[in-house]
Image 1: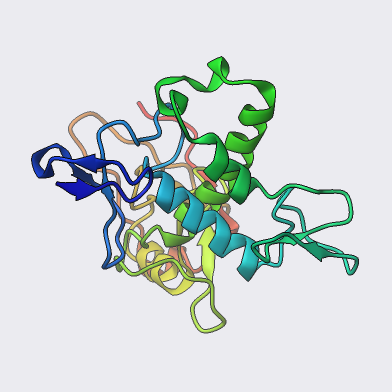
Image 2: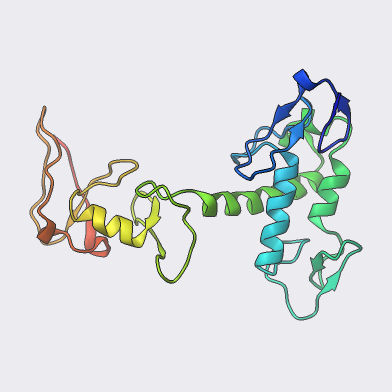
Length: 219
């Protein structure tokens, strides 16, 4: 018998599952303790709690409304920061509410108060998950830093390290993820004929992707 990390219920080992956390310590979960129907990669409630708590502490957000906190802040019993307008922490509320049939209900089946908690938690989790996405070119985490900042392409919104995408565009005119074709303002429009590949522009024709616009049409 193994204890579920979230509800602490004793379950047979072969009925336990592991969360998809990339950290060293994966969480053991029973079959009933999984979030579903949300736009997040993780379905583990413990990962949700940990990621939301990490973001709130790191970015100095209010644990009640996840907005930047002002100077007039207070703390709850577990030392979670709250702004002057909030009295309840979503982390603690999330912990308290995930009982009984919580995981078997869809988002719309919950009460408005719980829907709000789930929505705010999901916002936190999605922010952290986006930050942890790897650069598709170098497969390294997209961590913002001064040496290698992150750039979002203006049309397809895919994110890469600035140095990686600049080097990529010197050799190829398309996004590495979706193959959306970009080209220089001053260059003639390129079209792709049937059976041909998208032409690779010479390095001198594309220097920086800030001055690149999408290709108009394909034939």
